[in-house]
Image 1 (cartoon, rainbow, N blue to C red):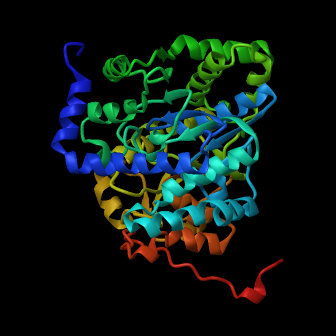
Image 2 (spheres, rainbow, N blue to C red):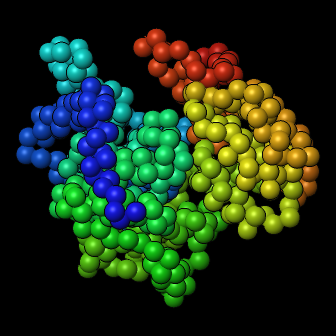
Image 3 (tube, rainbow, N blue to C red):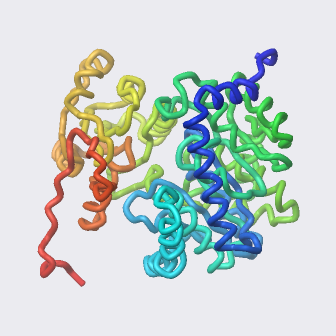
Length: 458
């Protein structure tokens, strides 16, 4: 593969799609101008850009908690959120307050966006761009010295690529978002590796030799020094945790074996940027790092994990086997977008006692169609359909017997609709984009009945 020229292939791809490329890169330039306008002396926070198919959010949380050991505030910008928009913004492991987001939007970001739109309506910032600017505002207000910034989709063309950063990190490259990033794995690798910047260290824990060959070429062309995290780094992390007699709680991210790769990647970044940092503090921070929606124990016998592609499902299935052994497992699954159902369900069929297919509120796939697609791979495992996530959870509870576990997995939007305690946020999330006349692409649209205002507990 080393005889191939992937940086050149990127050039050809951009030329073939010049109009599309220019529009994407224009958004980068627009965001750069906004950052320069709002922070004319440069933004004070040192940013680490994180991309990858799986593990981006967890890596951001490990970076955030590890950098907090410097004695200064550390933060993270992550997406999507599970229940509340404020979950996208975290300082020292805690979500920011709602009133902080309101103040940042109303006093700083909204006036700037209105000025942009007055000059040129086509320059109105998007939801993702606004969220990035709000994150930077909150980081400045909290005196955040280090912050991890998670890409939305891909890497090269995501708006987070417009930011000045001190390091970049790529977790892995898999099958997700093929309709947006390219049907071929090498296309998706080329896109995600595109977060590389001249003179900025690039870290990756991808283990695929073909992917690594592409990443090496991209980093070389960008003059970005590459650091590869391998099995030895993960083993070293495990030994360090054991040597410090740190025993992660079941709720800790690092309790899951596959999360140790994300932790090892974060540790390599932290050690490079802060070589004098207290290693025992970082390890303790990792051992106590948690993140909503990652193998989350909702209540006794019920767990939820955001795992919406084949790679994440595979890792989750292995962890489910390790933790629950021969216990009966009822899986509630809802996927969104254009993900291939058979790939997602192939692994689940090996561990499930019953599968309940439901929908997601945003771009959710039709549960009945999904059941038809997976008939040939699930064998004799019962597959039920529930068009609404809360109905799916009620069905799972009705089926559950002593010792059995219920696991909700798939789309963030499905888990949010099944478990969110706030009916109003649930409604807003389910109808995202309606003001822009975007058609609701969820086949099984979630209908939410709001309680009367007088019935709300205050």
